[in-house]
Length: 240
Picture (cartoon, rainbow, N blue to C red):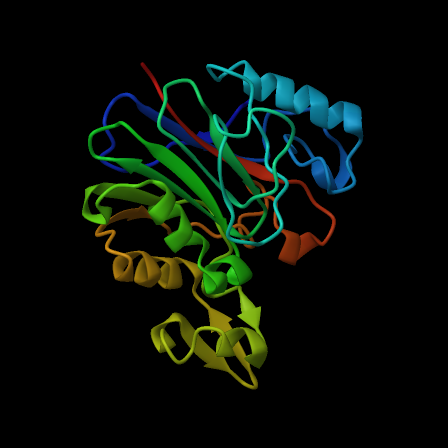
């Protein structure tokens, strides 16, 4: 069965490994079909476990999943070796530690250094973007931001993400370019907002974007489109 993977088009060192899963290649059925990796979206537990086991076969170690809450906490798994820590980003400075987040419209952002000695990933929906999850991840990577690379993974596209005034107000004053008006609503461009916030944080080498989880229904899960749906994973790690 197909296991479609999206590999970042970024100039990362060869020891930095990363990819994003799609909805293909798993055992889940119904709205979670088929490679759902989320354990909190209503899918059959055994199906999620099987999908996660398949994913782990592609990795140096099993994934340490996060309990994501749309916040800004960044986890270093070496410092929190047990359980499923609460957080919306993870970083690593050692080979063999897999950093992963789950998404289904929110923006996954992968990070690494040009030297290949650190990597990380952040889960950035509008709440996380507004609260500063990308800036927190840059800070946690503990490097000159100009030495970091970032890749923007699959998220809801700028022509599909309609939001209300309360969401626009969280960004409009600082980043008005991230929105287009549609009647009494706004279209939010997650990709552009992420780029603007990363650039302001000093990260200049930014790749990716251009996907739309909402419109590409055969390839991606989308919470906005379907309500009940699965989750994709975006992962990054260092090889020795």
